[in-house]
Image (cartoon, rainbow, N blue to C red; front, side):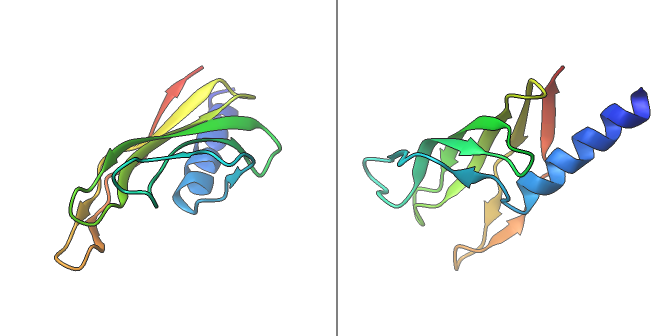
Amino acid sequence: MVKQISGEVEQLKEWMALGLFKRVSGGTYDATHTSALTSAQVVWPDGSAGVYTSLAIDALWGKVTSWKVTHAASGRTLTQPAMTLDANGNPTMVPDISVAGV
């Protein structure tokens, strides 16, 4: 049982890291940084529904640096903690994705 749960969590983390969830609604965008998606309905590769929510937007670059995505089928929420951006707006430090839930 533990091995199955561990495998499922690792699969979800891989999908999140690769951005394999797809937006299925128009979503909402930040009022200041209009290209920064703040929330949207999503679907995962396994067909599970979810909700994407941005948690932090870099003020200089207007890029989302932290977000969370729910995975309805498993009851889990995956969170990308805030990334550090360099002088060109590229990620230089990307913390590990955390997983909460069942």
